[in-house]
Amino acid sequence: MADQVPCQARLTAVVRFVSIGGYIGTIYWAQHLSTTSLIGFNLVIWGVGLLGALLWFFGGIETDKGMDIESVSGEPDAWELLDLQR
Image (cartoon, rainbow, N blue to C red):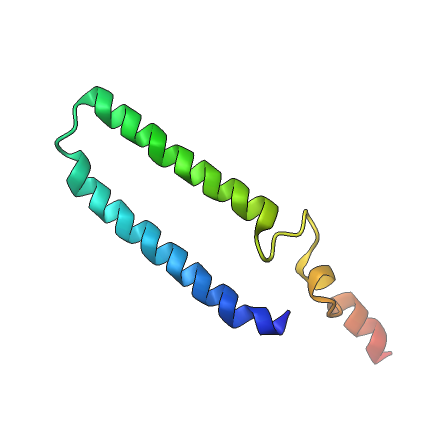
């Protein structure tokens, strides 16, 4: 798990950079759209976001179907550490 953290952090930074940069660009681009075109454009943007969320949910690195991070990493949680100290 520890060897995935730098790669995961890098990919998270890239996704955030692209999404924030894209958002800034869409503000300037969409200012000239008609109401109907703007609604269609927003539907497309929301669709892309939904697709990304679904891809991340089903194939994301740390998404493990409701398991907590301690179970996924294999490291003991706080309660297990307290039991080990006794």
